[in-house]
Image (cartoon, rainbow, N blue to C red; front, side, top):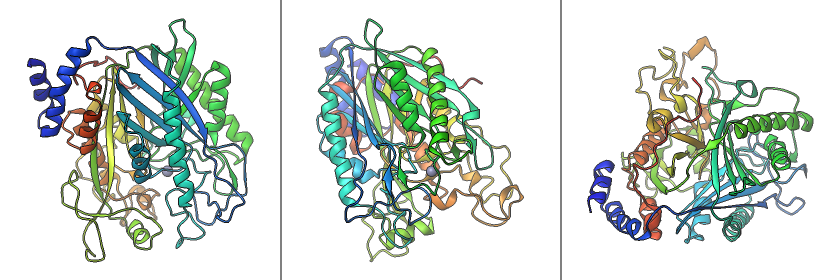
Length: 502
Ligand SMILES: [Zn+2]
């Protein structure tokens, strides 16, 4: 079993479970013979909440008390299923502000035949509250739990039905295009991830089967006064791409922290549409530039992480049940779950459970990041030196996506499987006076972050996945379910980075 040995050496300190499954995998790979063909399926379902019932629908993303008064365009869940032999991966995007990890776990519990199910929210600011903090007022819970249960059920059915209508043996190409003019960075320092990334799936004869688009911006053109449910600009982007390429389109949100937003303009559907069409134009450039790449073999490395919540507003929200999520007492180890938080544990450091993952899809890596990543953490464009008035100007720099993945081609899904808020480089954390950049007030960001350690825990957890050192139950479970899905982690290293041009 020389192959197995190499895998283990490569992986470093793997847990026994993962070792065991890798050993099994090497055998399975030998029996299965060469890499199998890739099949793909696309599907979508309407998840617009019903209006006019007893429960009001509170719109999320800005202040409280914004009650939905109508629907401009439907909110959708869109799904891409990838299948290689017995390995099945579902990638789901929902037009919501941030579906929480417990809901995603609920979707997964009912899909045991899948190796991995990823659910990412577009971070839509013109749809229903699914987090809790945008209800009638700041003391009331804004989520209709029955609605979230319905979303869970619809996503599950969507994944199942998509897997039943697969297109066999598809070809894949990957392209990128960059345009800083389609973004505004509303927080200093000015750092962007203005690269749109796309996967194009085609039949052997060249006919398009579907597109997977990843772009990095807050869906919030309609602003804080709008009362009509809409998917915001991705509504127009997806509609346009569907029409132009005559195939299904799944839109995923990437890096939106720090803060990536559309350029300011009128909060009208005309401008929303115009901006959505501009993003579709950028996608068309990426599609035109796309080059063939292999998405097999597929392997998932996931890591459970426990993020300390030091944000007083979040803690208050949790104690007042405006935020409803299990808390765990910190063990001091971000990879180890503590005891459930209770009234008996006041004053102890609270953590929340979430997950970071790397999906190794042949020559492509997909980073699954459970919140709003600051773009500095993508390419490492940190301000040097940090502003001396920031709270921790000497803090260690977090590992970045580009550094961790090296020259591989990649995509990044933000708000993947969770929304834990902003993931801010610690050197930029600035909650205390004096404030950076000579400001009289703190910049916006920290108020919607678990705390200054969140980014490091997520990025180190991601690096751990890439190094094959993840030891989460989840990964072990995934490989147990489908040993054929594991393969040599050294395979499929590609030549060029995530499409950044400089
Ligand atoms: Zn945001």
